[in-house]
Length: 631
Image (cartoon, rainbow, N blue to C red; front, side, top):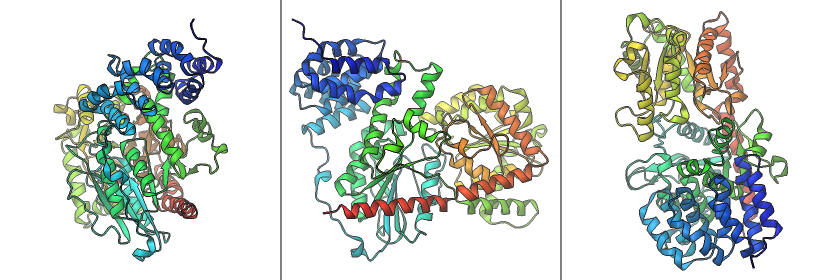
């Protein structure tokens, strides 16, 4: 006689299948798991059907996780066979889901083979075998660490650690725009410098990758100030999506760095990546409370793709396998649940987005998330503007400014004479598809009005030794405008430049370069998504009219038609039209007043000092709470 499936499992499966969005279905996975735990083996047949239904792959994923939680017999019957299936997303989720159940002897061999094969799914197999106690991967994680107290070091202020594993971060920002060293690297440098000027903060430890054990050793990291600590990672530099297999190395390196620099009062995490995952585990073990900046990534991307029809229940599995969407969503939720406090960026409809995208009700939290806008250091931009004006007036300027202007002039000199009087449209950032550099080049090149009105300067990427992501964008750019005659058509690829050079170039784009480019240039961000936009703020503070994505953070500070244009950056025609409109605003009689107003907006609301002060208040509260709960 076939067992009857009880109402909880049937009801929850139906809820997953009929959820109004993919994000809604993913959010129901845990409730489905609870229902199956209640019903037990009675739900086996129904779950089996759901797993095999390739027309609804998000429900299949949910069913895999539910089956793994339904007891050894169900996991053995439904999940273990998927470890060797030819369907990649099912193999991936079965490997991960088994971590939540008790050890299954017949799963050990296939999990071991998967671990040896490596990659993201190999990392999941490694994590499952570690959770089962089959392999011991990191003895150090379970050692008893030394914990010096602030009194032992003679310091009164807090020690704050901040992490971005995937960049080469140093105080000079020499690697800005190369590989994955983007705006967050700039932010952490300036933020750390600003935090240590706050009397509540004594030390800031900025952690990022290192590929040699001896690099950036924390010799004096216990002294007051801003310190840069390297986390040794094996092998060559990898792009962020390829770093998941480095979980154990990252965990070990983070633990050593944080222990050597102890005590650490608060650790600030900013994204659902392997670095944050490893750091959260280390923080738990060392007793360090965490603060998490919570952004809807990849939530907003999933919602946008679903709305456009590019992502459906029938195609979700392949996208999930490539981008680990469900894993990242659930990792972010786990990081949020562990965090002592959540920080969010401003968004036009923040409450709605928190509820709809992150399924988080801010009104139901014991301590609601705190809105903290990102900030920029205005001093280098002000200095750059003075130096460019002085250079135009024939006055002597510091060697760094003279060198930066000479580098820009050398690029501009490659333009044909007929294009040298045009203003510049400049974009700055990583050469990555999310940043939309190739989309911008395509939009500019294929719109005659846009191409005739300005030259386009693309700053970012390693042109000599591009990463896979950079090579993909360069190939797309080359398909729109051949690099052999790019300067002849008005496209200048500058590669990555230090932050100080970029500050000088932004000022020069606005003012023009005598005989080489006209005044009234504009800044363009063609990003598919921009949670806030450090480079956009820097451009506004430099007096440039900006073109930015209409979704996300920029809409909270860019006034459409006044300080910039908000546009659908996925639509090339709209993007090119916005660039033309921005050039019109930059050439209007009131352009100087607009520039001054834009700078005032940034100065009053988005300085790095304002951001640092807001975060220092949060860190102080979190540290006090942690101290109250210590035994």
